[in-house]
Length: 441
Ligand code: JFZ
Image (cartoon, rainbow, N blue to C red; front, side):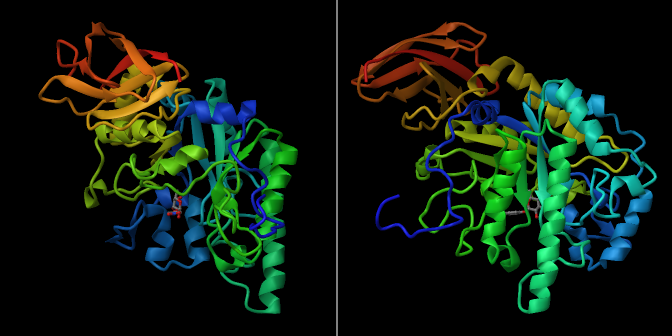
């Protein structure tokens, strides 16, 4: 660390990207699915006859439902149409390489039979370890499983939003021990888990216990060598989150891009670290909500563009699903998964293992890159039928081929400027042109 930096006990443990095989796998996967599933799926945004437009997984807060009343929903947790193999096949077909599962959301209900609380799937009519069933089914399809875990826990009497008294301190210390136990339990029961994605870490109580966030990261890494942890877990000695007081990223990848993405021209700084964005399909619904007419629902095309946008800037994209209480997916989500999968099966080469290309963004779309292969992902076809490409100094284009299609013409129009032709027949959907280049930089 440079001299002007302050010394931190709980700051970034590492400078720059992790370069080991597990991190490379995380990064190369690029496309993931989020599964938000919990008791909130049962009311689906409706409480006592009233429909709430806010995020369905926050309904307990919107409708001001006391914890004990909310947790009675456990009596109704019985997803009779749940078919983990079908879930895994759906993910596989969509082309996602990993799935992030809510092991426990803010409500406190655990999808695994935790021995540290009574609020688990084991105490419902379903009884079985539903998380274990998911982990096995996804892993059997070769899909990595990541765990979402909310530290904030509305079911636990020892949780504190802030520490204002000695009593708070004692209660919260018990809570942190409970959380450690749950995390150790998850790491022990499901040793194939590749990643922990922490949430619910924004409260003053946690910011005042930055040491604990560093401890959790270390504990999980000792138990599960190679495991990755998101930046959202972390706070430093001064309660600074994601990036420490010296501006260095904590955890292995940045996880603050939520329902938004960095600007492809102005925010290129993100290409210096690993990051993962996540998105909802309606405006802001993670858990199942009965009424999707309450907000704008993104089309498959808009979802695809966000996936490509993230990868073009060296990030991952996680697309959210909120399964129904019966264990099936709503038709809109099935159709979306199909549409994304159809595109990925033709064009996945420009996503998996790809990174920021380092070329100036053009209005027709995005570049991605894998070593010497540069991909043009075209979302906006120009009337001129020429796709303008500007290459960095000493980089020449020698050939352009449509992925799973024909070669297209390339004309040099000025130094380091080219016109790449559109395919003869307009594909009518986003398409990818792979460039062969001569790189003498
Ligand atoms: C959190 C949760 O509250 C929400 O229910 C969902 O699980 C989502 C993935 O994560 O919501 C957040 C957390 C962080 C930000 C925004 C919403 N943020 O950093 O902007």
